[in-house]
Length: 175
Length: 118
Image (cartoon, rainbow over all chains, first blue to last red; front, side):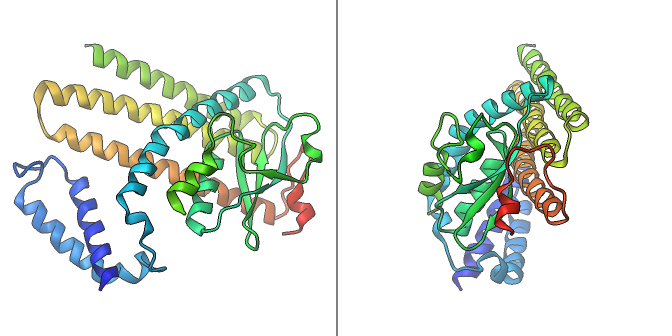
């Protein structure tokens, strides 16, 4: 029952967000709200086993969702800007020294590991290539390694980000 | 007027970053470094393009209070999130497939993935 309610309400809210500005009831018209209820019920019946596969409802907590929005608008955006200026510099000058390194992530859940891999791909001159499923290590391709860094066996997740402590943020949101 | 100018500046910045992504795609030597250019630069450029749309739509929403502009704003923000997530996941899939099919990073100073043998 709980998976059905969660899936149906998420689908209903998402439909409302998509058709915002259609009528007089706050932002919506009655027809769209009715259509949203029908679509939510249908989605809840069909997708409840896919959407709530792990029976894990931690991400429904409002504090975590607010934390996710703050994380995306704050630390992530700073790192994204810095990474893009760096990559633009490398594109123009062509000074690259690439290599694949092993990164010790320290994440326990799959969701946190996914978020870290996505953040790594979009931020600091790095690109996640593969995952070691046993101990949740990531293999990442770095576009510019400094002299001597290639001798190091394992990197910690905190070392590759420039300004913000991204792994601590992800741990707070997703674990 | 001011909002139009800001939207124009944002569009130009976005186009510059997208153009840099294309130049990097042609200029870099192997598949991984090319993925760097094509994922990061184009994501950042597209964020600026969408920001231009949002600024333009917000200004017109306040002038005309036509609620259709709200829909433009929300859809653009959703498009940015979809773009960022799929870009990261897609580039990860391409990089993993390239390494599995034997494309070694060339040039490279270190390759821990081949040493680990995964």
